[in-house]
Length: 220
Image (cartoon, rainbow, N blue to C red; front, side, top):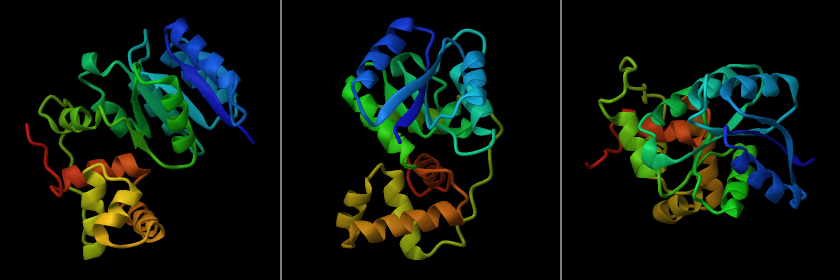
């Protein structure tokens, strides 16, 4: 079955470009479009979908609020946030809203399609060019949300803590395996255990847990 995608962006040019690229791909199809957050929420309630490609800045209901509403709904909801990162100082909010991927609009369209596949498979993805800024925004004092207590890590083993730290630095499963001299399959097993023990939605949330727990720090 092809990956069913909903495109949510107030710029028709962006939606059209993505739709045209996806039209030539066998394993991905566009099942709906939305020009704002309110419409995006409505489309996901009407349609069977796997991934929403969500713009951050849209009139009315923005991408963060739309992401929050969609991920609070029933079933697995995967959101890829598409942003012009230099202008967005509040993207960290999308993490707490449940987004599974963060991409920038100047990325190659093929890379965006690849990200859709990754997120649809249940993983998470952050464009390398925005990882550092994303974490800085999330951990900075600019956040207006109440501070959250650090996640209790007593349930995880020393090895799982080590893996969580490496996830927090942005390493892939293959890179973690190489660093710890284990197989990729074993690295994936540790990741699955961490997701379960820490009640995390996906890899993005594990990154944030690592930062909130003080396992990884941001050097400004």
